[in-house]
View 1: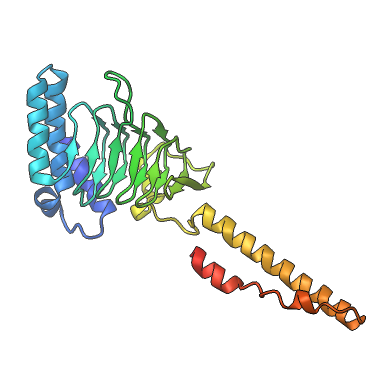
View 2 (view 1 turned 180 degrees about the vertical axis):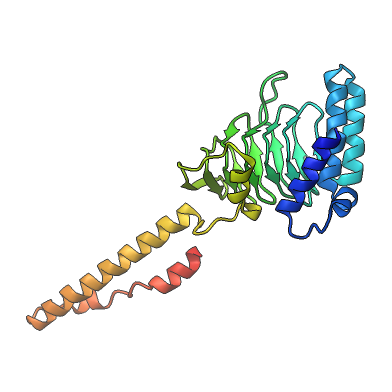
Length: 251
């Protein structure tokens, strides 16, 4: 038990630059307190003491603002940062080295008792603040979920998902996530990645750029027709395409 606690504290210090020492983490980090109480609640749940498990879970919620059902499976070195408003459902599975920020829900969309209603986070997943992961699917190893994303389908390993509903931004197929060191090297706070723009926004910007190119080509054709003595006055009255204004709307 104490070795797991030391491991958790060391992992939090690695992931959070605001953590100054082990004593501060042990006494002032509600995410750690919630994980510790969950281990006790899960033990009671596994021993058939269902009410005791739920009561301990409720006490943890009162003191930390984090609700973890005693039936949920939480791996090693899981860091719930800030944590207020985090909800983890009964059949959820959180793998080793995952990081979950405040306001996250690992929820279920099915009402069938006994089924796998809640998501599985594979090793090294990062879930940004306010993200909602809903359903009994798997978020692959090393995946990143952007803040306020609403994920309702499986996310491939190494991918980044953003938006509502969530869309895949990028995927690093060559990433290896079989060790603590690798997961730490790939860590990005709140799931923020370089060049991680919404793919829909990228597509719209591409269409606007293409329309701008076509507008310039049309201007060239009209100029050539005018030089040849062909009147194009009615075409010239058409309002010019304003790419800058549209790009601002998309951003």
